[in-house]
Length: 129
Length: 280
Image 1 (tube, one colour):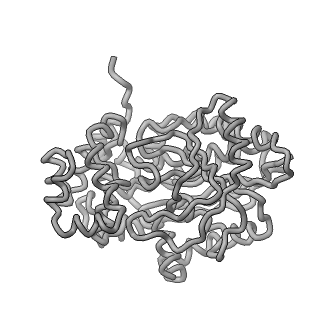
Image 2: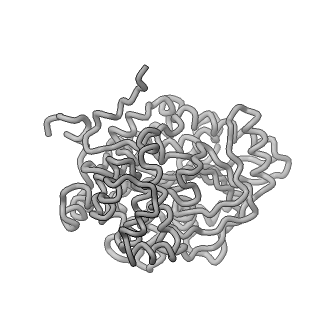
């Protein structure tokens, strides 16, 4: 019997559940390795070679190289782990979050100062805005 | 006997820690937030507890995907501020209270909550930012702290109901500790926020304020709120709010005194809430 996953109809949202976690284990553990300064230096010196030390899928490696966080999440990444890549790149959490929305950094920051993304129209996939 | 005198609820946004560490608290962006915590800091000075039981979540810092405990109690003598990728925060080492922590672990596990016992752990912004917000930036923290980490990163996280009942078990455990300690229980995280995907930046003031109202007046009913309501209404990371129900569950059954309530948007990507409740 299928598991109950009532969160699949929330727009623009991927819930990091046990299945995503299974898919993303090596991707997320690679991110975790960037908490050590020497690993950050080695990654920066040769990203592809560093990624090849991890049993990640080619898609996952490409998503990391492109810094495509939405794709990383689709492939099992979790934002708290992916944030280690951002830290390595010198990005703030707001810059990382904004990069997934299709907005510019300034637009996203202004939206937050203006009270954030409204809930109206953002509860269900296909809901009228 | 030890007793729980108050509970504190606060968000634990990492950017708040960065603002403190880089001396930006007086900047126009941050000033309203820190001003809003001034009454809480004054209250904290006047009501210093002997121990803080601090419910928070680890953000892929002490726990990677190798081991994911749902509830973990820190029983060590001290906990170092973690390097989360930007270098460790320049804040004091957190002193634990191993005796009370071991007592709570034994009591709560016998009450059917299968805690993971942690004797070695670094603590991240989830724990240190609330301490800064409530205590400022002293050279040592005002009292020992028992870190209590809840998994809210990998879904499913524990239900609000489970968290509320765990709070009850913690209350019972503290009440059976012989030393006459004054204990605070803090619930941290939230409020509405989403850090991922095209819906990142979601904020829901109505949800947050209704949550605060109900947390004060009817936590029993609030504890029955299903996960999906948090995810849909408060954002994928808004689910952290279930941790507030642990602290609320640890309070007496009689209505508490509301000492302070504050709400502010935004801190980086997040709606910030702060509430202090005293047992009457």
